[in-house]
Image (cartoon, rainbow, N blue to C red; front, side, top):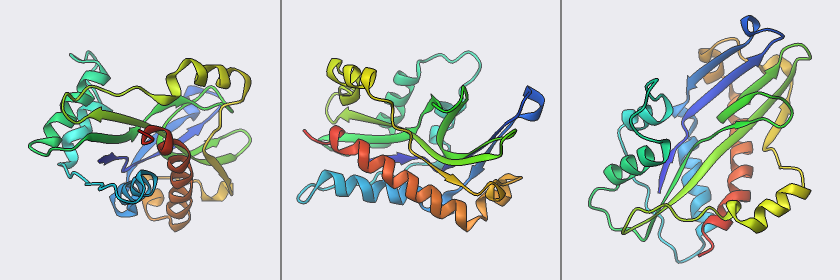
Length: 209
């Protein structure tokens, strides 16, 4: 498996674009990727070997920060990255977990990966986890079907509100800089808890087969 979620988004939403701010803090020391691997092993169940594949830190930079006119779609780009990381390994499937940009249901804001969000006018502050699970076939590297993209899943989502994986925290914990975010034990522990909850909800459907 490949875990690539060691980025922490710090986003503040103000009344105007000038009062809004987004930072990305490097949080390799928080062990989020280690936590992801541990939750995948739990979801895979006893008797299933989960091998963690390592890669250079720069490998996912083109995926997360593409040029203004990328030559590839994110899907094909991710496939190429996974092929390169897999190398000569021979796994039945490759489970890849990355940050996923998505609209936050409480607002019109787009949040990605694991991070902290504050609605500036009201000072409401939330830790969140927006992740994408992608499973590749081990032989062809074709992307397997997303269990949450079936007709049945879409019908369920039409009648049930989408679950947000977030946790409201004290507004005073919102960091004023990337360095402050990295050094915050409260943010680290809270982010790990929200991440684990998100993974435990999503992974079983992807690893059922």
